[in-house]
Length: 245
Image 1 (tube, rainbow, N blue to C red):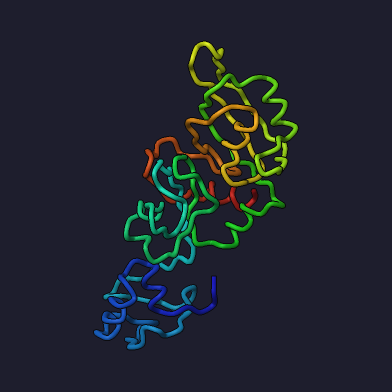
Image 2: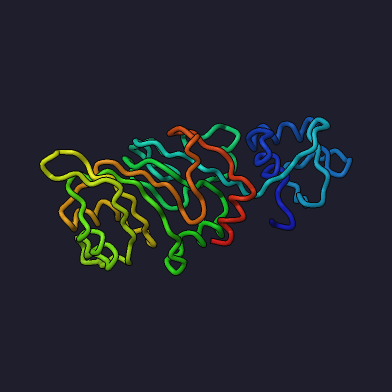
């Protein structure tokens, strides 16, 4: 946490309104710092030490927020987009001032676990290619997924751009014979995050992913009680696990 921070930013993060609304509250003398009425919404204060009250209500400042979102299909993993709806549009107004962003991305038609935060340090830690943080996916695949595919994925496959993937763990939960016309159900653990990687890996062995869902990222597992589009803040235990990933 920074030693000092602008008063209006602290109040916005705490949910007391927009910067403009907060400026008006300060002008009306509704805000005190260490028992004294302040008139400057840009005043630098120490959120960890100073006592800040708005109409007598104590301000609890949080610098960082961590949300687990069950991303639904149809939304893009971005903070803004000119064509599609973004995952940030699923959040309530109480999180509007935290400048949240998705950690990594899921394709528009993919659902599952997506972490949203404003903690750039943690995001970098989870996304760093040197960390090889594992990501587990469930997929339904058109085509008969075989033991040969499992071995190929374990050795790394060549994608359409010539890139050879890192070894990945493929678990075949159910594989129907080709004549059945049914889908193969699999779980795949990746240790990297290339563009459309799961789909492109199956494409490299002549298969097509028709449904994809991310189940976990590092130690963080999707809360299956969350319906697509729902979210919640991470627990202390989940946060501890992420920091040691």
